[in-house]
Length: 282
Ligand code: PLP
Image 1 (cartoon, rainbow, N blue to C red):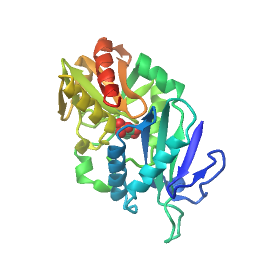
Image 2: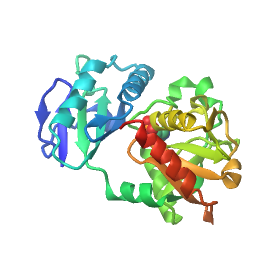
Image 3: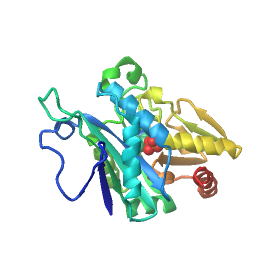
């Protein structure tokens, strides 16, 4: 089941072609996106997703997105959905057609089912490998034109890292900076637990501000956990009580194995945090 809604409020057949071959999103990955989880008809963290869309658009000098039109497009997808109880709604916004100064950006919301692989990861956890992302943790602040921290469509490197993980017999990746500090996953934020304190690296190190990580921290605080957003040395992963990947569609996923070594059993902390996270939306 898939539902496609364009930003102008029209529905279209997702099985038909709609993107021009000269769209800059396609030719150069010149565009941005968001993926919003909808559960039982309720979009999660829609405001923060739209805020981040606007922030990414600003970083790429794209026209300022009409957030109420985006909200309407998400609603249109939800209202026309007849699939399972959860929807992954992708918001795609590109620079439009090459060479046309009057080109309208390509802008649509596409609702999709949650993949089986994601459901399995949520339930069983994942094995990850740590991989060098090749930049220093102060680069984002020194070189804003590199767009670190914008959610652009240029995910070729992120996808290559996931294939490298698969070659090494793992499911996913945590990236580290050249100083060894923790960054993020190719499609997730990384959360580390030590006792009843959760840690994640700040967006200033060149990573996306995660809407799920923030929601998990909010729920954890309400459940009596402490939370810290501060640079996390990579070695902490090996000595932590729990390591988790957080993103909208996977929610909070437990990491059970790091670089081939089993991590301490964090199933009960994970269950508590995952429950607290879900409970915010019911
Ligand atoms: N970091 C990267 C690189 C991502 O692609 C994502 C989500 O896809 C995240 C972090 C987590 O963001 P969110 O929790 O808002 O989905």
